[in-house]
Amino acid sequence: MDGTRLGGMSIIVLVERDADQGVGPGGADPAVVAVHAAGPDPDVPLDPLPVTLCGLDTAQMEHSEYQRTRPGQRWYPPELAAVRCLECERVLRQT
Image (cartoon, rainbow, N blue to C red; front, side, top):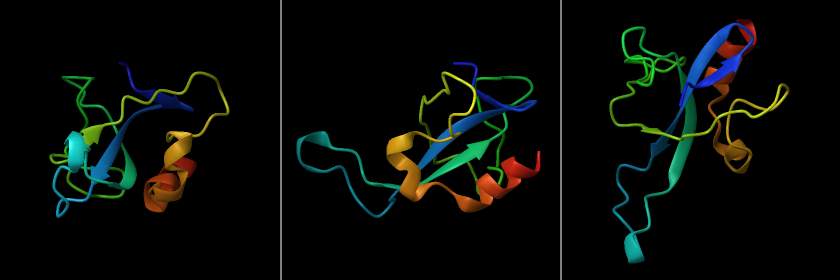
């Protein structure tokens, strides 16, 4: 995974899960609270920088494994549009 490119910026799409919610029945993951964007670590491009574009710590977030497949697609997975981070989106629009 090389991350998603927006304009000249490469990003890694991360999901923030509900930390208070345990693993559900049948091993279901806790609900996604938000989708964030972070720049890639220059030394390890598959890893995100320590903070998202909105300033949150990425340590407890998970890679979404989402990559845009064509220009014009959104930076976040379509099924998670309702929980995308609007601050990350604002920063991306300014780049």
